[in-house]
Image (cartoon, rainbow, N blue to C red; front, side):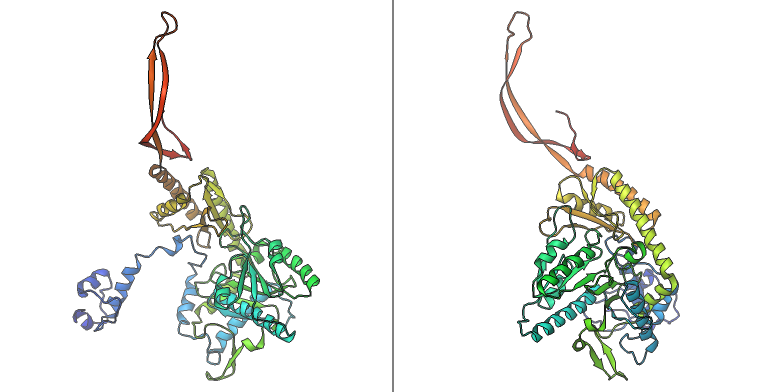
Length: 496
């Protein structure tokens, strides 16, 4: 029960600290059921505010690709538009127009073959997961329509991929044909992917920016190999590119890299606005090559909000703030600004990579070209080291994930640091200093067992008079653990 004094406090009260909350809310506040009475807005705020202090710091969360900092002006725009429902297009036509501008900006960034006045085909989503599912549904429906028209079975669709669309395949009853990774090759092999394609394949999904290592898959080679197979078989198997992480990097850092709609078989691309699109969590995008690639029967038309509104999303009501924030970033930064941000991220990744390599303790498995991240593993073949090291870094506030690689490589444990816009040189250097401290502590924790060896020896006289007595080992026994010594740089150091 909450004291009634709280309800009677003047609204202008200056008690906005945890002292206030503890002074006037003396009984436990219900956590899993609705309280019987109200409390003041100040107390409610402070109670939640104080509990959230126990969360990690978003800027020190090096596990996440998601944007954790935006300019105050954009924060203000998001606050001002938080009460606008994205789907109310008739009521909020300007918001709808800003979304359409974003779709066209991204489409042209990805080289959609459009005329100057032609509108692009795409939609905003709550993230890349929804975007991938929408693209997958479009591929599935197009494949079904084609098979039905040909009088062939259409009940066993499959999708060929590396490791990025398991959720779509499971939710929408599509067989997953996954190309396994192998040692030293942590992305989908285009040749193996094309070998797995058959007449029931709705598409091949490639990743531009692996979440494991940041590496770009070779979409151009995939396009060329699949084109040859389509000609031999008469099939029309297309490509989807999951550019969640790399879609806002490649156009600015690697403009000559052909991965997008310049390749004829690429029919759709998804990208995360809340990753390197530089917007807070809650916005993704999916772009189609043309209207023909998005079946009409998947588009819903509603009119109960005031006018005919076509929509193709898994979610309906959602906030407009992230869409508006995306347009702010496009307007504010332009091509030059995005390129500068991505260059800065890559420079921070280089500093981090060189610093980690200099310790002599890690193998760097990420590539220099790709998403600005550093994936690394301990040289020592002990799967537990990465998890222990991750826990040690948390003591300094850093959140660095440790994880095992997918099947066939599960014996390799990797740590990964994602570089975002707000992780500059100063933070990179501070992180490296904490890495060295954590390594020292790790070495003091890890003990190498030294077995006890018992020798039975015999003493005898020398062969000749005046010789030293002879010593002969007649028995050797290995006993239990007598002592332990620390591991330094992966080598056991001790005294025999």
